[in-house]
Amino acid sequence: MPTGTPVIRPSCFNGDWINEGSFGLDFGDGEPGVAHDGSAATVWPSKVDVHQLGTGFNGHFYFGHTRSDDIKGNRLKITGTWTLNTAINGAAKIWIHLPDHGAQTGAAEYNVHTAKGVKTRTVNQNGSSNRWVSIGAFMFNAPPKVTLSAITRDGTGDQDIAWDAIAVQPINGQYVERSITAASVFDPAQNVDSNMPVSMYTPLRTRQTLYDWARGHAYQGPRWDNRDVTVNGVTWFPRCSTTTPSEDCSGQKTWDVTNQWWQDIKDGGLDGNGTAGSAPSMSIPVWMAMANPRPDSSLPASEAFKDSNSYKIKSKVDVSYIVDNSTGKIIEGSESSGYDVRVGNAHLPHFVTNFMKAVETDYGITKPNIDYLTKDALTYGRDQLVRPYADGDTPGQAYFPHLRAARVNPEDTCVDVRAIGGGVHGYRPMVANKYINDNVKAWVDKINASADTNYAVRSLAGDVYSLFFKNDGSNNAYGSMIGNAPPIWQDIAAQFCTDGSVKPFHAAANSDMDPNNSLVYQSYMPDLYVYVDDHLTDNAGGPSTSRAHAGDWKNFSNLPVGYGHAYGTCDTNARGSGGNPWAIAPPVPVVGDGPGERPTEVRHCDLPLTTFNTHITP
Image (cartoon, rainbow, N blue to C red; front, side, top):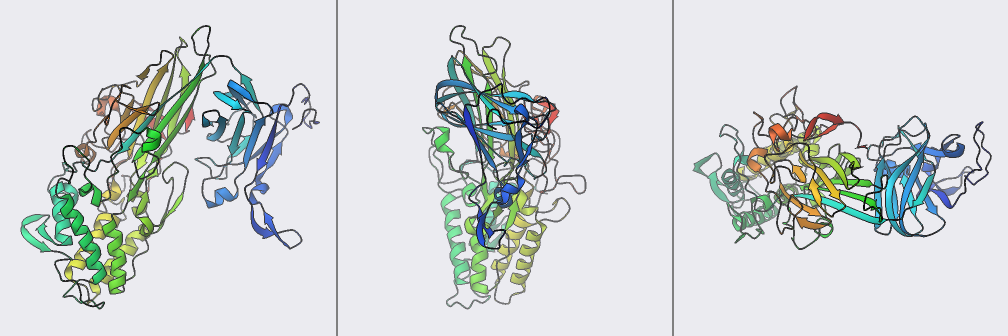
């Protein structure tokens, strides 16, 4: 409010400060609607959720309610913008004022527009007093601007989010900005041999069983469960000579798409077609749509991992602080940190979606509806309507993340930060929708009942259902094994110092990592790449040209017995990279965790006894 505006609340005086900037609220572009007089007009639904209270800085602030990043949430999105009247060329600390009530969200994301781009700082607004809170110091070369929207990662419309005052405090000193990026990549040459016993009746057991399974369905090969028996697949049958199929041939489109799969199987072979350490262009992980491209080691992380198809997890922690030029020490209160963690897209293999569409073309059996909504798609708090037939994408589901924000050490020479996050393969949220199981099962039943389909088409349809879509309804204990895949995670703990060094800061070692105390701990899978200040390094922060750690498929796919598997509570001291930060249990009937789990708390794996149910703590 302008200086001198009368304050309704007793004992509040609005005249002992000078307003040196502007504040505005934005309600989006609006949408077609009807005015009060009945005429057509542009309306802004979000305006209905703007409220004000006579408390906060000098007795006034605005508030609304947190919203999720979906269609409804964006209709009700409110964005507040504070802008200083004058330019600042140098470092300045940003303070935000928070009221004693009317501010409940623990995940308010303030975006600070700086000389080095937009920096996001997450703040827990909840408190019981009117107070100023520093969100850190930043470099500016223009009038500082700060924005805050009602969209939060945990927005439901229930919690208040407040727009109060901000203050800008110029600081003399040297501005320092550092970062760590961790990217987990499923390599095209990943060995997918597991330790599963023969009694686990699935072609996913080894490379050989999966390779034989594919050959037998696509053209001809040994049975995956009995190599002494030969199986004839879809393209072993002749391609139907007309558009009218029969059980003596395979439908034209069905034969064509399966033949493309057969070419991929032959090109990749058992071990992939890469040579001398190069990434294969075709392999089992590639045609199964498991693999990401192997990153170009010459590129910075900001270029190598722009696309959500280029990684399974990508975490970035950035810290900034001001060093006093006269003492060489960090100015306390200048430190700040941000954390962005994303999970990548998973994919249904092309041979699966293409086969389903081809069966509709050739046999008139409508492909099943497999569209669904993923909560926390790619990043926590973001919902996405998924249409796998369009691009095969099944977005990974992010699980509850946590940032322990930047802290300065007692000597004022280093800033340390800790972050934990990750999520699950995109098949888990897909398979969690029981109607998808029902739709695909009904599709298989129609194929089996058709007099025009041959046994190879019927067999492939049945295995597509059981391998990718089956949900048995009892925590999916006997359903799709890929749909039960355990979480993957990254645990970052690092200390950045005024001498330019970066050091691991975990509280306990991890015997599965190299070195045992490293910047980033992670789940058994997949490969890990570490970047300090956007440059590829090893896991201690030294220069590198390759991955920091290789994925361990065998332990990742182990049965949940003992410690060497990916289910249950993580504890790096006792379990290395075993377990997970959300304590997701195996899909045991009744007491286990099925594919629809959405955790609401998390732990850092080197300190597993402490759990967090807010996204950030000081």
